Image 1 (spheres, rainbow over the protein chains, first blue to last red):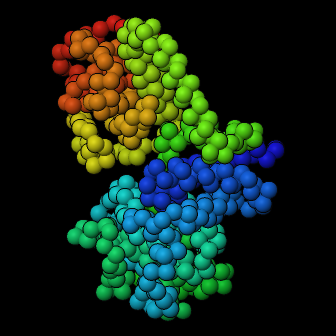
Image 2: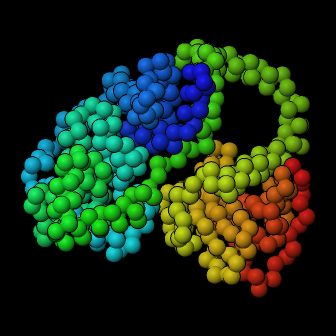
Image 3: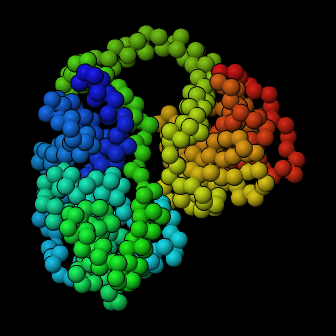
Length: 193
Length: 272
């Protein structure tokens, strides 16, 4: 199969994922559409660099993220759109070596409540952007820690830390109705579960 | 391995991301610790109940069309630079404006005759196409297995127009699910029902979009036959409704109980 046909086959297959990740990165539908198109153009131009023994999705996600960083560099900052790099630098440091911080919240309460899948999906959308990105890449796109680390240009340990924090915050949103999505407080149950 | 260490490895363990040696250590601990085993069971149940069913937000139809246009351009090397594209569009726009000016008088007369039919035809065609995609699971639902009231609430939080759904408990009628969809770039609520085992789609569109169809008030229900489907269009409670099915009048069970006396639907006003 030639390069063009391969690309035309692969992109529609992953289009929902590509659009979804563009939304995660830009947070605005109109910007997501622009990012998606620009990423497809750049990916096609660089298709000769794609290693066929690896997966297409992490490869093109990496390109999309780099395109978004370039786009943010090109234009002046807008209050609602902080550059990815800035958000990452503002991220609080959580050590995975701290046992209390590394104990996940049990999902028992959520299961008992019989929440809907849609409510869980909505809660993910309200996670802080840096955490949402990792949770989406792992729990919705099903990518490996290593692939995610490559996409976000961070060590695997950072991915694990963000994933832990993102999932725990998500569970806090779901079990504590009083805490509205958007508040970044992470709850840790006192019973050690 | 103690309990705290085992718990700290819970996520990577369930994710299948632990190296073999560490995974074996965790499993050895789980074999002798019921409390930690229970935690793992809950985590697995949570994955199966929720996480495994999560899907990326679907790309809107408009984006699909854009990409479908872009890909052949890319592959066949017809991609122009952005500036060139703008110039091309500008030239096309000027040309179109000239054509409009030249054909204005004839165009106005033609529009008054065909305008309504053409717009209605576009809506009908788009509704039938979406119905087919919903039935074939090409457009996954955003919500499913919910009550009409819950679906109504869900749409009201997301759409800027009144979405009102009848809450009928009629045998043979089942609300399968719903999603936000697009008919000719208009954002609509798309609902999928089953009536006696037949798939019926109901699209609720903003009243403004309905008005642009410029349909006459009577008959209240407009019926169009298109590609083998019956399409019923009407307005109610500040929104437009489009019902697509292959079962004619029986599709009205989506909004009316079987014992209600209904005026028979008019014959299809057009075969498109």
